[in-house]
Image (cartoon, rainbow, N blue to C red; front, side):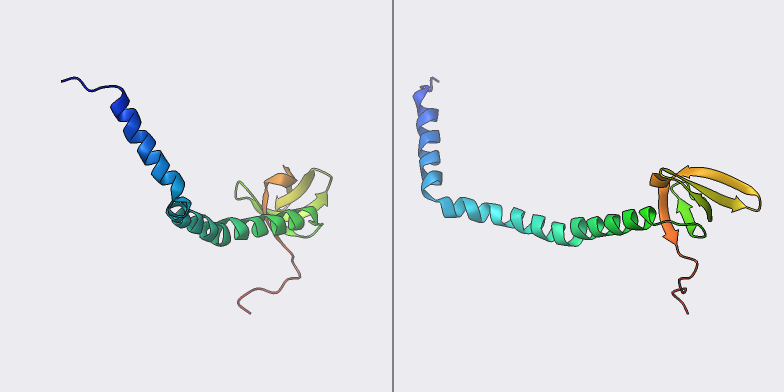
Length: 116
């Protein structure tokens, strides 16, 4: 059976003409996607950005005597701070130098515990 080449083109042209005339319908089909993105932004992306800002601020303000946790899970007390490095005492007379960017938590020793 032979189907002329112009028949599918005519059908596509009619469909595109109908879609172009109903711009509101195309917006309504994108509305759920936009709504999901807005909800995702406020519930996931924005809080994560705030957390990263506070972590960066605490890493920049790390000082001698603070207790820190590294990305590798090592917990220790800061004994010396340099520009890019921090010296951490992980056991009595055992000190390691770690890069500041690998710190994941900074605990101020004067801070009150949460359960008190």
